[in-house]
Each structure stands twice: as structure tokens, then as C-alpha cells.
Image (tube, rainbow, N blue to C red; front, top):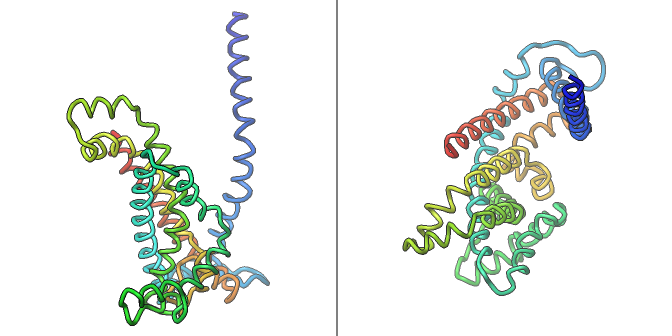
Length: 297
């Protein structure tokens, strides 16, 4: 009986030690995430300009944003930006991970070079790429003219090319980080599997698609999930490069929320837009979790 009490006491003590480790994280989450989200939910149901009393308006703010062409266009633009950023970053990061997993000369240097943009200041990245994309004297357009393209695009000054320009920079900045994630997953695959596949006569392509790719599924799921959430929340890079312009060519939902909050000071409308964005991200995340569960099973 005494031993059982001692065992239960030890179990309880270990549990308390475990809770003490995760408690600071939960406190931070509660203060900096949960409370602001709940406050934003309340704001989405009221009319408030930051001063004076709040007026309850129910779902009127949601009706307002879906009647606003700027919000609908920003939502469509966010989907476009997210789709191409996720697809291109995932494929390029995977290709680089496979390439740099081989025994190459200066492999460490190339890995560092690919990863470097991720740790670079986003302001510096935006300024430098704006210079590279400069229409008349930018190195990129000079190169395009040199290979025979007479009328290269205006990039960030063009309504048509501004979003592709921002996508290119976003892919360049974040592919290094996800390359490291996928490289770690590749190196975690037991060498025995490769040797067994080689003995069975499989070439490198068959080994990758039939053995490595299935084992990479959890890492690929993580990459796609994080990229999707990050892309939906993109703000800083676009603000530095174009401030949502020209016109509203690069205004995404987060830029729309910023504009309604800090320029128009219509906090109810901006909070309603934030709730719609949260709902979309939650649905996509649930779908991805469900797909990942089916694939891994």
C-alpha cells in the first residue's frame, strides 16, 4: 500500500514537472494569441473606430466585407499568391534537398548559400529585389534584353507582373529553410533501404518515388502546412516591396486588414476580415491533417 502511494506520488510529481515545462508556453499562448483572437471576434460583431463606445451590429461587418470588391479581390489574390508560393517553394526546396544530399564538392557552402536568404533582413531583401526588378536599369531586365526580349516586364511597377515578382522573392527567401527540413528528412531514411533497393535492381528514380517519397510524406506535410499558413499571413515582404500596389495589384487580405485597421480605423470591418482569414486557414489546415492521416496510413 505504501509502495503504491509512493508510486502514485512519483507519477504525480513527474506530471507536475512536465506541466511546469509547458506552462510558460501556454501562458504566452493564452495572453498573446487566445485573448487577442477572442477580442478580435468580439470586435467583428461591433462598430468601433477606436474611440467612444462600441455598438453591436451583429453580422453586418461580414456582410460589408463580402460586398466590398476590394476584399473579394484581395481574397482571390491571396489564394493565387498562396497556391503558387506553396507549390513552387515545395518543389524547389525538395529538388535542392535531393541535389544537396549527394556527395558534391563545396556541398556545405551551397547549403549555406541557399539557407542564407531565410536569415536575411526582410527589409534588405525587399529593397535589393526592388532594385533588381527596376524596369529600365535593373539587372534582371538588362539580362532579359541581352537574351533578346525587347520589352521586359515592369515587375513591381506593373499591375500584371507585381504579384509574380513578389512570389519569386518569397520563394527565393523561404526555399532554403524548407530545403533544410526536407534534407533532414532525407538523411533520416535508413541507408539499408537504399542498399536493399540497389541489390533488387532499382535505379535512383525508382528508389526516390517508391521508397524515399513515401517516407518523406510527414516532412512534406509539415512543409506544405507551414507554407500555406505563412503565405496566407504574408504582409511584411509585400509591404516593403510594393505597399500593396501598384493600385491594389498586390493587396492581400492581411494588407486589407491593415488598411481597414490603421488607415480607415474601422476595427469592426478589419476584425471581420481577420475572422474570415482565420476560418479559411483553419479549414485548409483540417483538410491537410485529414489528407496527411490518410496518406501515412
